[in-house]
Length: 140
Image (tube, rainbow, N blue to C red; front, side, top):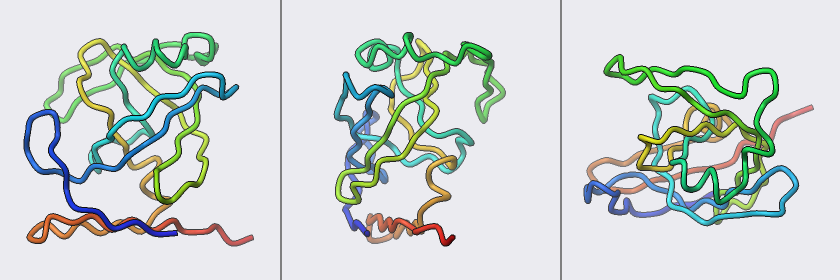
């Protein structure tokens, strides 16, 4: 399964590689649709603002052993992160992926990190402003 899309405007109004994403809580009682920025510098799965975290009621699914951890940005800024389980579906690829979702009150964008991206072949055609993403089936 493969998608090809033009870059879209991010919240900062710059063209960027963005995919349409459906996020769900583990029980699939709550879901949100969002635009997610591809972030190859983020080691995790999904990062979302607190509003979306609360809309999904992820507090009910926070990791009991690590309900909160600290993360660090590329600029050495430390963040207190809420951590919960969830499910992500990239529109057009339509594979349900179990994910770890982190959140912080300072986050503005929804980010997809390498925790998910490494399950895909990803091509960013910067001059053409295109994203190509293909799901890689795991072999037994």
